[in-house]
Image 1: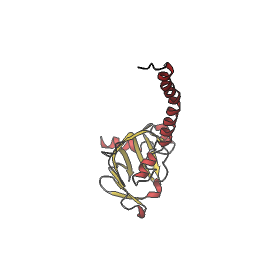
Image 2: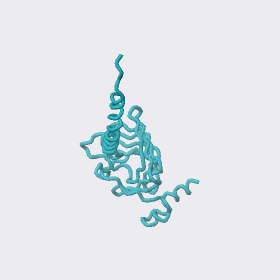
Image 3: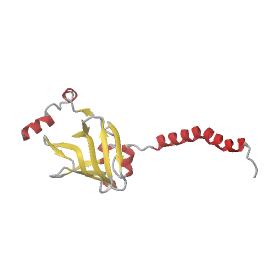
Length: 177
């Protein structure tokens, strides 16, 4: 048998270690640019990208079950067109094309009452209408009101006082007790 020269054994390993940083740099840069935002995910599913406020900290989506779990930096209010919504720090729902159903963690103000949003549907994209299922009724709104994510207004009393929200949500909760 022939003896292998030591450099023949070392050379492949040296080449691997020399190329490793280059490979890692490529994989991390493509991962960062390939990362999807919540706005892109919603748009890819036929929904407007501005449904959720701009304070999304993280989100996960299971394509097999459709479960969407969104974590916000904090609970907050958001204004859409002329409406007002309240988001808890975690919003969940089942995402499918053109719909977000079984929503938890999102309330909409209607006639001074806070009603839970149960589902959101864009049945016909050409119509420019989005339907909100608020339990007792369905509310039709213009899709254009949800093109950009709204500002997340903190739910603390000091921040809410600046926009006239003090006591609106909390007052209703006290009335129910």
